[in-house]
Image 1 (cartoon, rainbow, N blue to C red):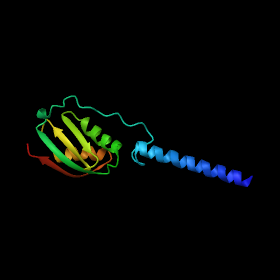
Image 2 (image 1 turned 90 degrees about the horizontal axis):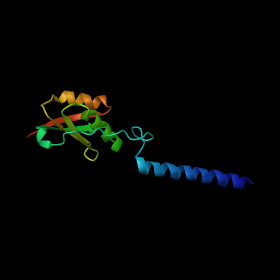
Image 3 (image 1 turned 180 degrees about the vertical axis):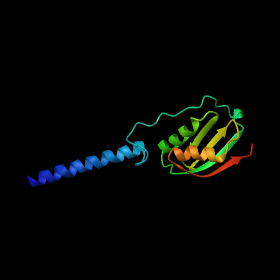
Image 4 (image 1 turned 90 degrees about the vertical axis):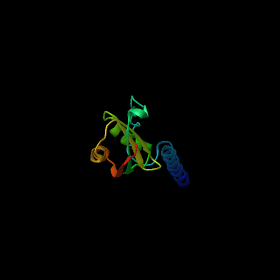
Length: 125
């Protein structure tokens, strides 16, 4: 009888472990609200690159998953005249702007969203 209970407990632990692994594969590691539904992506209406003469590349620390990149993009895309695209692989975000902005303004938007801007460079047009 004792063997039955031990076996049952081991099976329960194994089932929970498999469930956790499957969840991490589907939703990423324990980061920025993985148990919540993904934040809806804020889409920019104007995606014509010619309308954005200024391009900034910002290195960002703290982006670990696709939810992180979405948080950074959404924080920037909420601002009128900005179109941002984050790259998880490069740990950076490309920011297109219709007018020239101070780097500190962009860095403040990213830091307010919970990430650390490391450097911001204005690309030559």
